[in-house]
Length: 216
Image 1 (cartoon, rainbow, N blue to C red):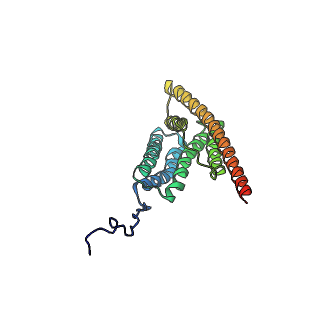
Image 2: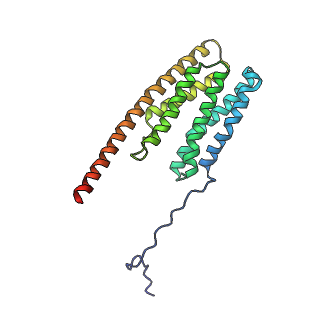
Image 3: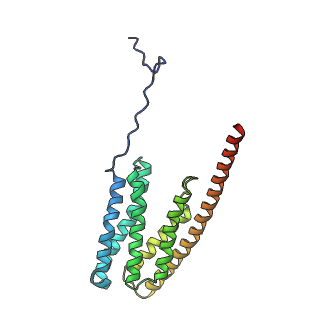
């Protein structure tokens, strides 16, 4: 033995072992918590026909916890390399589930016009399907406008969950109006990005086919 490490002597090197994040990590636990909060939120909001202000405060608390965990689970997953296949699937499902449940319940109770619920849900589901449509050409990143939209939606829906009267009731209407406007504007921007991304991907594929044809 020479006492010289194999790597220093030019010998074979062992590839570093990359630790895969397990299912039970803090990011996934927060995502699971949000999924559990969806039925709990619905029960709290719809209790006694949705007329009890106290129960609606409880519902608001559940909704607020879900929105807060939505912020932290993604950040933790990226910061500490806790990204898992479960998280990639469950996180967007939890996002859409809590927001969709809140919008539908509020419309059923007559607190929120159905067209508002329709516009927001159509946008959210449409953008999700569109991401899959162009996924082979690239990924559409979350924009700053999209993050502001999410914040506006969460704030507006949270205010509608509470029983508000007077100036606060008027103010929440304007907050929801801003949220709907941002929903539409950012949705159109994502459509533009998707079209550009798809065109670039198709052009790249045609160029590659042309090169293979010329080489053959």
